[in-house]
Image (cartoon, rainbow, N blue to C red):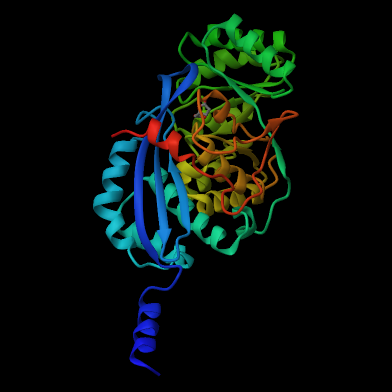
Length: 384
Ligand code: MUC
Ligand code: MG
């Protein structure tokens, strides 16, 4: 063997084709089509941290870290995640094999506590790179999809009765959505409950309401007296996330189903929810659980306990939405999804927009998460 061949072989051992060659991050701020009013935040734009991981042979995996509306939801922010990634995590990724994501993620857990959304972006980018290397969609890494299209609801959050009703009727007429989630929690509980019941009645479609932890047990009991028998059939996260006993209390006495969102982030959260029978639905999101594989583990534990699954959103862009779709498509989701955010953003940063039609969203079929970043749009929306 010549000296050249020997050097070539040594380099191949040190830098195999699937070794991480470089990483990059961008923070993008994308405006919304209209203000989105949640109980504790009003959004006019949504920020995303994008992570790209490139391998030695030029494959690029993408992941997105999102916290809906900013740090109020989970204490995380795109700026803090970017600093943590660049200072603490990126140095440990150099040269690592993308086909060893379990080991990489275990090491990151030793370096950084918490930060589920950041870890979700990293795992998504790694798995995206793996699936692109193999030329298969991400869903195939998890055993393949059960459906190519998933039902998708629309989130009404203008905060105004008439405007919400008009928006819902428009979505229905366009055959985009026939189920709605109403964001409430800014007014008195009985006023909000009446507004939600009137919206469901006027639109003639089933609706859920999401409090993002805004009510007490007493507030919830008052509101449920109004909601029982209305078109509102799911009550999402009425109580503070730690109050599992309170959720269980509501679940026992209400005919409106209880959905846990903030209460059901990590696998360890599920134990108490299952033991106390605190929810009949859980909302699944890769970002709040620390990535696709952890979200799927939570989904399977919930399903084994007879809890219905719902494909939630952290208000992800098309990139995070595509990643969530790839995971959700491998599950049986009794509650459908709310992966609607690409339609609320005023612009898209991917080349081919996701397809919304017939009350559903199509799961992308290309390799990896199945979408490609539009580099001009990325430059336009990225912070300096
Ligand atoms: C949440 O808590 O569900 C999802 C939709 C929406 O409008 O806000 C989010 C976050
Ligand atoms: Mg929620």
